[in-house]
Image (cartoon, rainbow, N blue to C red; front, side):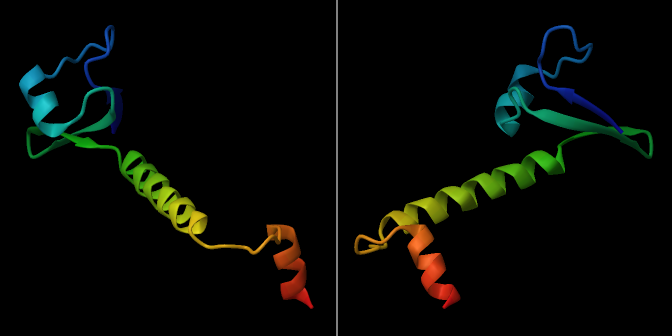
Length: 83
């Protein structure tokens, strides 16, 4: 399966701008597949997974900011948990 970045100069494949905007693919790597004589473009699954991980990490950081440590450091809490 081939992988390209949509609408990057010199890549040899340009997708019409209306399709790129409708699908939100600008500057994203996509995979090209041929099945039953048709050509399919779809987002790379690794990119989708990376977005999900980044969003989850951001939610973790947001929630952790709301939890008070009462002057203790993370290291002190870890050491306390080992006792």
